[in-house]
Length: 218
Image 1 (spheres, rainbow, N blue to C red):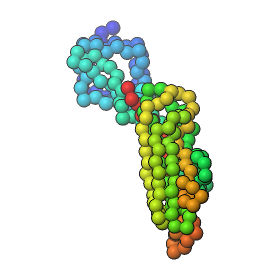
Image 2: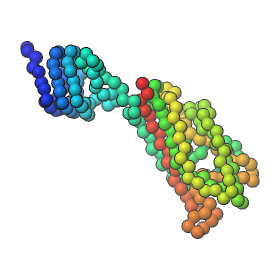
Image 3: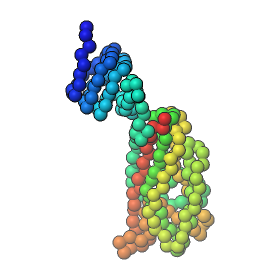
């Protein structure tokens, strides 16, 4: 059976299996919504093409100087996203380290060779007579990756905090923040306000958001 050369064409909703396209030129075309398996494309030139809605969602079709089609990974591709909105109310730091509600998550990576981004937006405020000090650990699958202290007089702030590290594998691991106050005279708290709408005494509740995203890294 003779091979047919297709140029400037559009192939839609098709299935191509165990096919060879040899010494052909396919230019300025779109291949959409199809399944292509077991193909060998050699000695051809593919230019200005788009591969849309394919079953290979993490890769894009490219070709080398000899016209051989290959797949290359799109490193910016997000392969998983978790959005966690905490609505449990204000939380005061305890005297010993504990997980901050809304700021930790037990995550199972999709891949062992990816990058994982943890980002959160949350509020902190003083919760004593006029001053507050809080200490924080940031944990990444059991390992401490960061420490920091927050404190001040009459503070009420919204904070954005993020970290990016390689995946630890494909098993569940906890990533997030633990906190404690400095001592019994310097309490601090999360997810609320000390003053709000002309009132005082922990009168407002805020709502943190935690986002975990996993990206390709190979």
